[in-house]
Image 1 (cartoon, helix red, strand yellow):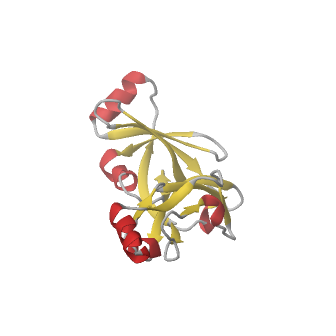
Image 2 (spheres, one colour):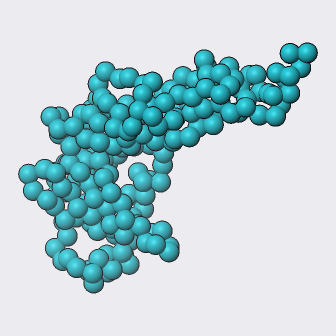
Image 3 (cartoon, rainbow, N blue to C red):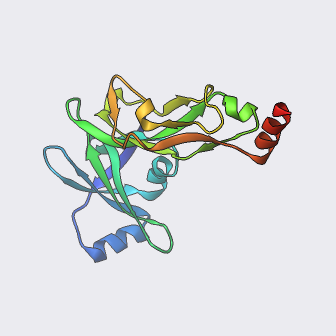
Length: 191
């Protein structure tokens, strides 16, 4: 997984009024939990958004008073109208504890069914995986070259050595739908 460096300051005041004041100065209230102790911090909105508004998943190294915490973004709260970030929860990771995180899916190759006139549809963009953070890849690459018309690739078709997929095996990742052009081509070959 990629890493992202972020500086933070310990929050001394808590509550709704303090959080509103922080947001007015372009700071986001946040928490680091999962380690020895929970830590209330504030992070810069502009810097943090570089790790949030991206398809990539990062290990976020947060520097607080000279100490670095390796974390992943666990939960983000957005304003319901303006979509501004209201609060972030960072989960501290370690070499021994497994984490569950959503990784993006990248389809590779040109599907056989697409060459025959079908349409490749990616049903799921991310899947949750469970493993040690250092063993997790940046994305899950799925080869679709052998996929024919009417066929699908499901989560159950994928296997990995260093991590497991935390989704149901029946979840469809990609499928080839038959199009009118593909049906017409099949009818022409039968004549």
